[in-house]
Length: 548
Ligand code: SPV
Ligand code: MG
Image (cartoon, rainbow, N blue to C red; front, side, top):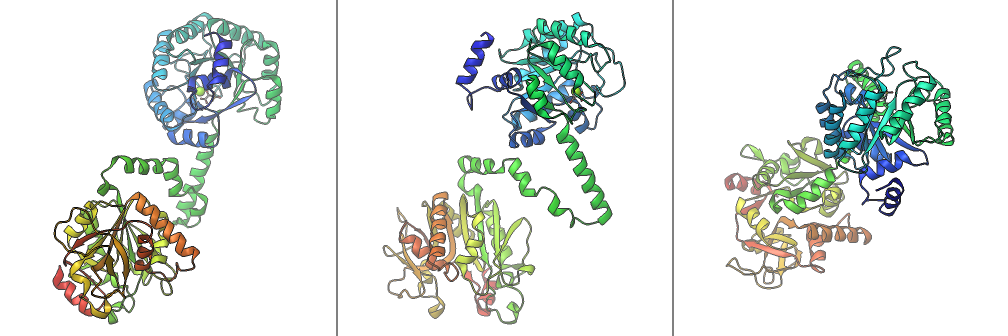
């Protein structure tokens, strides 16, 4: 494809379908002025992309420095290649690699270009110096490559690219090395004729004077790229008006992170505390965002068996009425033969493969802790009910979900049965519990047909959960354990919103929430007989100690 047709094709397929090589070619070889941001690993590549840069400069200086090495080819080129692979995986924008001298002669450049193409790199820049290289800002009069020999490196690179749109930029170091403007122009012209797609003209002056002179004399023979690290004060419009194609901001993400890391380290060492820096550093959530944890969660929903991706939200905000035992600790912490009710629940969920437990705390929340559990607090536990507690955990209501009271004990088979019952929402119902508690029974269940625990092809469905269901109608008692599929979770969230709109969220209990959902959507019943209990009273607690 000749240049003109390629650009036309590029314009037609611009956007998601356009390859990274075409994108880089367009931004380096056409006006208006484009910008490449330095990055040195996967994280900084993502940050550059998130900031809306169109492309990345994979800087030799900053990749070396981030590995703890000097910019003197101390990292082997295959080690650099590994870093580049992380970067190309992390960001979707094109990467122009600082290929130093090409790591040797024409033969090294051939293999380098092939390997870069395989790793999704869009272009490489090679400089007319000798291996091992020295950074351009170190010393004076660095030796330059022989022009003919360097042209051989360029031709070898161009002949080795497997993608027509791969870009090879030739970097002219003549001005850096104190050679004349004439030599700089002579070298650039030779490199253009050898097949370079663009020329990077480098300078270490504090003004853009020699770059602008070069640009004028060059007269647009090929696109020009510059690196204004030392002439940073020059207004960018000067480059734009001069007709330069691309500016590389060559090392600023690394330098910014060095400053931030040094200040943070010094503060923590001096203060022996994290307190003053917490608000000044990225949050752990920011790390999860940059690592695209959300994408992994979505993939888990697609690929993992349902039980391995279930999350449990445990409502443990209420104080309970366990006499002096609940004077300052919530009833979920009542001890049942060496483990609290809550810990027994958590252990049971863990054994069933539940991925994550979230506990909503309220009364005595400072006392409620556990390993590997996320906590949410209902500060208004005293005047609000269960639906409000659940709503506090709204950000966790996602994917496959279990909702459980925090004061129940049940045998493993009940949870296994619940997890194995088909339905978008399934609740665990004890048919022996319909009359068991007399006045205390609150979560009585009315169903769309009589309940029994013989084998049934299809589950019965909920019509109502409430305390005032007559014994003759009540099919059983909800034990405080419910399962929601992602669709069921959407219904749950909708109903929480509806309660909020109706001004009922603060006072609603789970029976009301489930009853309202059941009026709109099927809520299936997983039915069994006995083998569970809740801990409402001291008598319950005594019974619980025999239960386990
Ligand atoms: C780099 O970023 O590694 C460069 C640009 O090559 S400079 O450090 O200016 O030489
Ligand atoms: Mg470099």
